[in-house]
Image 1: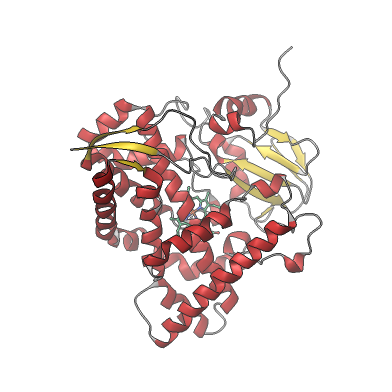
Image 2: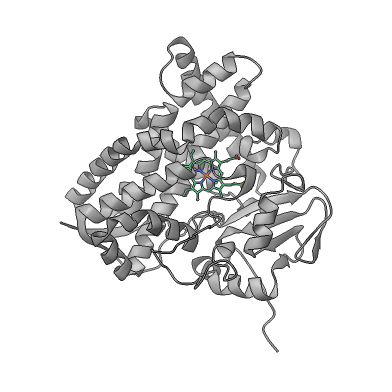
Length: 400
Ligand code: HEM
């Protein structure tokens, strides 16, 4: 008899290498109800893609956890809204993240990456997260929004706290103190942005904050609360994710020295290497939805009110879509991974994140002869099961 299938997303060994279990799940349990919970996990690419593109059936607006007063739960940002509210809110910020606009930021990104590496190389042994993978995205998004990059330690504190429990709460209801903490955190961030918004109203600039303030001033387009929630979302959504992507890229290059060597001589492969990291070691592993009605997924009935957890990390290793799916291949063509989601909530910052990761890799590879891990114990994992990534990555940099 074969082993009974069980999938515990909190299990440390599973989190470090979920792919054998994902492969078995795709074969034998493409839809897996978690015992005792109103949650089912979904593992196949085709099912996940179909769910993410159908907001009529699948909502992003989750109810308060059992036992919590909905009035006391912070209101969702656009990420937690369905059309038509979602469409209205997204149209207000879309323009700031088009490929053309993002390209304009490239020289500045190189400058930031160069300065960070100068500093890191002077030390030789650094935690790559603190030295590069965290500060690059946070400085870039701070400059786009128009908030002082000097406040980045404060942003880190906010982002870390805001995402620490992300996704975990789907499976284990948060402690009341945790929700209180999040409410206080959002209030602190709201106050911070509110002060800056007042400054921009008096003294407009060429930044996203001024654009949002103008949308608010024009009346019906954006309420004050919506504006503040949007700013918090932009600040938080792009940080941990892009930090994790750059960190995972460094980890994959450490694990695949042949790929690292090839990128040093063929840097034109960096964009496809970044796509492969997104697929192979997806920073965001899961993307949940709430069933609005009774619906079938791959022959399994999901009741209205149940949550499906879409495992993007599994979809991106689906052999039905990707040839030789378990192989890390920086030259992979037709890499239609779901690392940025799919459908109406497709990541707003995808262009930005890609470019930041490309710039970071280019800097790391061109300014060093190599880099190697310091220490050999297991690295600390991100506390949220949403993320596949480490919170520290000590390395020794070998300057060119
Ligand atoms: C590697 C880096 C990133 C990854 C893997 C990532 C991943 C994702 C995913 C999977 C979603 C879809 C969520 C859903 O379907 O509910 C999403 C949405 C979003 N992302 Fe990203 N993200 C990254 C970077 C960024 C950056 C740099 C920004 C900065 C602007 C950003 C802003 C957003 C926003 C605002 C949404 C919500 C979009 C909406 O609701 O319409 N992300 N991201």
